[in-house]
Image (cartoon, rainbow, N blue to C red; front, side):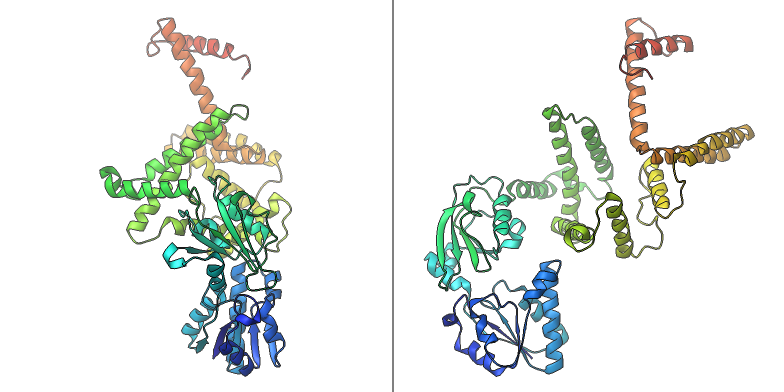
Length: 488
């Protein structure tokens, strides 16, 4: 059996007699944190005591902390039969380890005896002189504020604001706050250091030195957290439910639009001018169009009961955290090459892949696909050491293409042409040029010049369809002559 008790909001005077009795009856005790005014009740009693403050210092994430504590408490209960687990406040208010214990114990058929306790909320409502039910106050975990408070304007009581950086993150999450919204900081309630301070949103992280006994009451915000995205998300749902065209769409029917919007984002990126902020406008618009496609797919899946945008966001968030152990863990990676190498290793373990090419989409544009295949092979050493090894392959493959063309075998010629293109891609990779962008640039240059040829032809009343090659060459050279900054 695991007996779970709460140590109240502050001083020992708020600890129930029932909890005191449970502490006395157990000689194997677990304490989530000794950094609490009433923790002395356990440290002073005889018997074995385990505290977990060291876990907070060594674990990579809070989730790791909670899982580690849960594992240790359950292991001790299995070994010794009956243990006590004590947490600050009430076991049922913002105690993730308790929720994990309840879930795990139910699955593993371990009995739990959870005792009621006074929460910091009781003191908070008292100091604020309000009825939380009547006022409809929502309790928010400070670590999850940006997501848990999305679309909210208040009133909110924000707990787990244990450091000023947490307060800063909360403040920055509300982009459209005016800064003069009133807030109340509740600090060390029920202790000799108790402070109830009224200040403004702009001063949230500058008023006191926050710790584990700090919380924040927000009666009202001028703008909800994530307002613009919430509005956009709701708009997408409305279109899917009410617009005849949107209703008819499927994942498959939207593929052409997804590709088109992706290419338009690329065009907008290439048109960016660091000296001209107005060029940002096109990129903002095209990124919005691409985001709509992603939202559209997520809404379709949500209506089908498959997944939601929240699952998409959580999935990519967790994946990025896992693949950046040099940022969120204890892995050392000082160079880009080390980061990419770690990334590939982690991906291979995640997916259970057996080939270095697993995961490369075959539907990629051919040049980009070829570049990625060559890059993957290079990472395991199957490559020339430099471009001097790759470059002669172009001559070799050109000769083989000529031989294939001489045979009149179209299939053989197509194969050799593919080999020639692949050789060119390898050269591009070695000199650090993206072949897809290079060919796009060359194609754009050809297009621009030929549009110039068309303009000259119209000016000179020349019918391009009837013009001979010499005339076309003359027009082409005339257009090139006007390009003073590009002699090619």
